[in-house]
Image 1: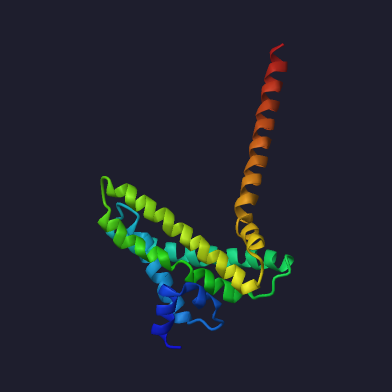
Image 2: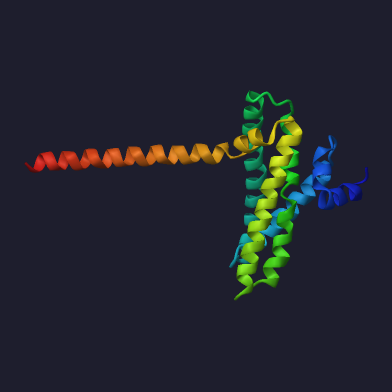
Length: 187
C-alpha cells in the first residue's frame, strides 16, 4: 500500500487501518508532528523564542508518555493472556492521536464568545474519539475482550486515584499526629 492509501485509510477507515500489521513509520512520525503543531497552537501567548523549545518538549512528551503507556499496557495485557507485541501497540497509539490535528483550525474558527462553548464540545468529542481509537488499538493488537481492555486502559487512572487517596490519608494522619502532639504539650 502506498503512503497516500495509508493516510486515506487512517482518516476514513481508522479501525481497518489499525488492524493492518504493516504500518508506515514515516506516516506515523508525520502524524505525530502535525498533532504536536496542533496542540502547540492551542497554547495561548507563546513568545517567538519559546516556540521551538515548546515544540520539542511537547514532541518528546508525546513520544515518551505513549512509550511508557504502551509498556504498561503490554505488561497488563500479557497478564490477562493477551497475545501481541508492544511496538505495534506503540505505533497504533501514536496513530490514534490523528483527530487532534483538527483542533488547530477549529480553535481559530471558535476564538471567542459563544463559539468557545462549541470548541469545548468539539474538544470533548475529539478526546473521546482518541480514547475510542486507543482502546480499539489495544483490543485489535492483543485480541482481548472489550471489558478487559477498558479495565486495562483506565488502570493508570484507577491506580493514581487510589494512590492519591493513600497520600491524602497519610497527610491527614500526619496532621492529626502533629495536632495531638501540640495538644498534649499544651496541658
